[in-house]
Image (cartoon, rainbow, N blue to C red; front, side):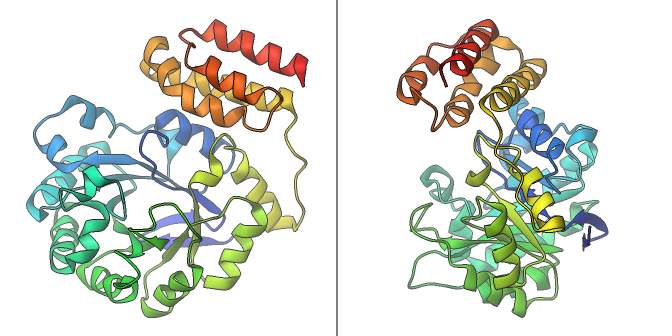
Length: 323
């Protein structure tokens, strides 16, 4: 399969797992890589948290070989702190350091981080420039179309990030005001691709292999990134790889296969953080795994009472028997 080059890091041109808070944890990254995700990005890591010695922030930086190539993603609004955090990340040997300039969540935006940086391109440029000085790996950024429909600035913003030293730019085709509603604008991804010379990663509304190919064809992007389209379906990356190589769609996973994948995902998380915490954090994933199945509403309610792995095993058996 063809590969793209991000600052010396070679990545297969299929589909990557997007950074997603409370979703793209270590276990999920391992699951998606196991199904062929070309590249993964961590959950957002607080630059200040890392600089001030927060244990949770530090734990989020730990990488395993099975996740690579993998980027650790920082968020922050002060160039000094993001640069210092990048220096600290060197100890974890990420393949890439990504800077979040696209998160629309109020608590992130309210501090001037995430997509709020698209309103302050001077600060964003300084963040990239200082981070590049302190990082021992390529530095990339993830942006949005703009703040709102009256301030669509992705193209000019991307140019400035490239000039500051960004090795690649990921573009989500929505404004911050849209959050995750409406339709992603793939044309803005095409415009950014035509405006910069570094690789461009397209993101937004890809939830099938056919849409992945369509994004490549319509935008000319170098890599496609999948986010919500992978919820409860980490095997979408396997489907994408197969479709891009053969033009054929793989058969749908059976209920038995889906339940085994869900249980394997849970075991990975338990191995990583322990059964008690893992079962709490898996609840939203389990809801996605059972979506569309018979009795899904009752199963969603049952998820809130899952505390032990054996309870999930029992649920999986009942689901298989009832479908």
